[in-house]
Length: 442
Ligand code: MEV
Image 1 (cartoon, rainbow, N blue to C red):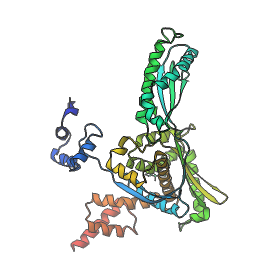
Image 2: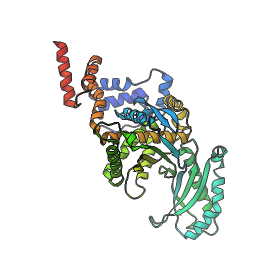
Image 3: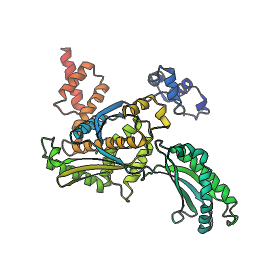
Image 4: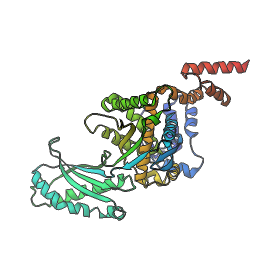
């Protein structure tokens, strides 16, 4: 039986590995090697990565790929993508190339407001609470001046604070619902610091508000935290062209393809089972760029899916139509991104990614990320409505299978050539590799 360990975080990195490998592995030596082979020989770089989180024992690599030829609002980008799923970068590149010849992506930022809330319990009259809020609101803002000063200098800061009565949903529950403009910072630290200060001031001032009874003056702060639901930090990306220009596929006419494509999107609009997978395809592109640029993909995921459910039923984030012979395909998604602070000034590859993107500000990055999401969605729907997804997927997955089967460089070359004209399945790859090896032995 494995016993809990005390003081694990205080152990050195080697001691941690020692304990883990001895406790959980039959072959501790091999496990240790697997962990240590990813240590960086550059000690400073390794230390930087060690200190991003706690209890670091090694580094976990993801491929960092690039998708060139993204024409966005007339400017050409090569988009960095960090992702493990084969075919995502290839699909993005293919879609970018397709739209490069058809006017590229048109994007715009619709809004940039972020939200944070102080959640509290109050037992008493709502009108007295409203009166208190009115008197304390200027002080709430005043007391955060030490936090907001430099953000305000740059044109951002606290936009507003509202008192919200949530007692219909939960007894005695109220909120300070605050809106923020955090410019090029994702803003989590800024917003959370402001909220915690609001909470402190609010609680303290309530103790001295004359109209409150003794019970009313004791406001109970439950928590203060930003919201990752940012429906007012929204970006739109769009592609469009005459229907007849869509033709690239030999099996379908342009008209047939356009109609089938629009049907596929409409299905995702009304059918949640399909919408989840449809949006997952969008997030393949979004997350990969979000990760490469050092942003928080969990926050983006949470916000995007909440937005997809905003009308009470989970639905597609993208839409398509054919009007007057023009095919238009667009995406609207909330993206709270930063290009300063966080990992952006720390991780060497994030710096590379941002420089490759011409050092965008947060608004430009929102548009680039949205274009990557739309491209990914276009590529997936194009395959799904024509050849099916497996053909391309399995071709891209071929290399993973060959690596699993320990194929040599030469064998890989032969196999790639062979599977250009043959269907890739696990079975077929195994068989073809065996016969190549047998031929080589003869
Ligand atoms: C796979 O990672 C993503 C797709 O399933 C997206 C879709 O079905 O639209 C291909």
